[in-house]
Amino acid sequence: MLIQLFDKSNEQYIIEAANLLASCFPHAYSDCAFEEIDRILDDERIAVMAVENGHLIGFAGAIPQYGVTGWELHPLVVNEAYRNKGIGTKLVFKLEEEVVARGGIVMYLGTDDEFGQTTLSGTDLFDNLFEKIQNIKNIGNHPYEFYQKIGYRIVGVIPDANGLGKPDIWMAKRLVRRNIE
Image 1 (cartoon, helix red, strand yellow):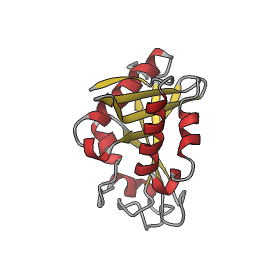
Image 2 (cartoon, helix red, strand yellow):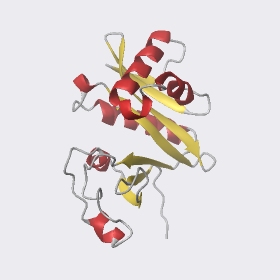
Image 3 (cartoon, helix red, strand yellow):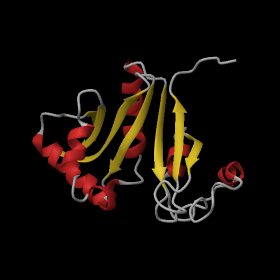
């Protein structure tokens, strides 16, 4: 398997990326996957890919924010047949390496809980928010635990971002070590 910067000149990879995005996030991209891939592959952004046997099996992207110091990880997509094999981790680590090379010091992401996969869903997060974040439980294979395993921390929540009781969980990771007092 090869993990590298996304080859924007390869039409096959672009088509495979759009199809993969639509299949992994049908509620968000079923009718606009190619448009989203165009945005992901924009020159100001960074995209990396995983290729095996000549086919794209995953990709990840980053959007510069706050100048170039903060980057948003969006999206991370891995073909279902290849999940739980470390590919997502390798994609994120390669993306982080590229972000640091461009002056980034922090990567953040939003991981929606639209489908009741955590204990933050279906509750009023305007009451005792920090206690609820501290006691979060994964009740439906939500990806926040994957991100925690690779060094990301919950830094906030946007209550009701996706509808009543459907929060967006914000996570971040410092990419450059520095003593801050």
